Image (cartoon, rainbow, N blue to C red; front, side, top):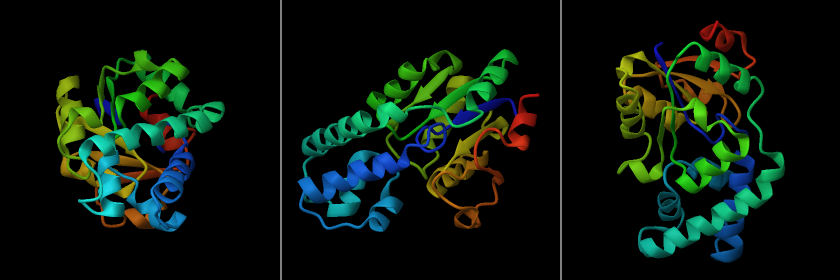
Length: 217
């Protein structure tokens, strides 16, 4: 592979429990919903307004209201997660080795820039990435391939030569739709949930996995 593209939440940092908790608080305590943890978890992909539409239908909120609610949710998430913010085991070493080898890297995430900046700047890892695609940069969310196609274009690398790191089925499906192979980090979903995707070449708990280490030897 000539380039690496990383999803952010759940792939680089293990924060999805905090996102689920923030969503549950917003949906139930502030918006009057009655959603269980298991009902919310599979809906947490794509842009925040899309999550709100999936949970409450298309007519409950205006776009301005959804934007405001999104920032409210993310502020709560950041406040609770900041004391625990760290890269997954082995990832810093992986990024450094890839960087030293001149392998171009990008982030392709459905997160808003507010959350991406929160991670990159607090962990001081922005310099590793030549391109960053956020929710604000695409019209269509994963599993549409737009996020990963745009990242490859900014890296000036053919999609077939890009390896995607993901943690959710919709993300790995987006990689497949972009013509890219994927490695799945099993922080939030188990391998059997990806069995319909032929482009997944490996599953790993984190970046200490031998297969991943050999990618940057």
